[in-house]
Amino acid sequence: MITAEAKREQIIEAAQAGVNGYIVKPFTAATLIEKLEKIFERMQ
Image (cartoon, rainbow, N blue to C red; front, side):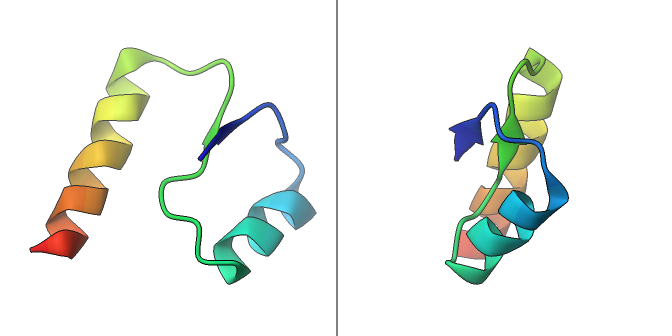
């Protein structure tokens, strides 16, 4: 999930809803790659 919402409560709410890879804008390519790698690791 990519969002401009960086408040802790919103991040926790998203995690409780099952969101993987919460990314707050703006973000770097390195951050995106790191999150994607973690998601793919969980899928294996």
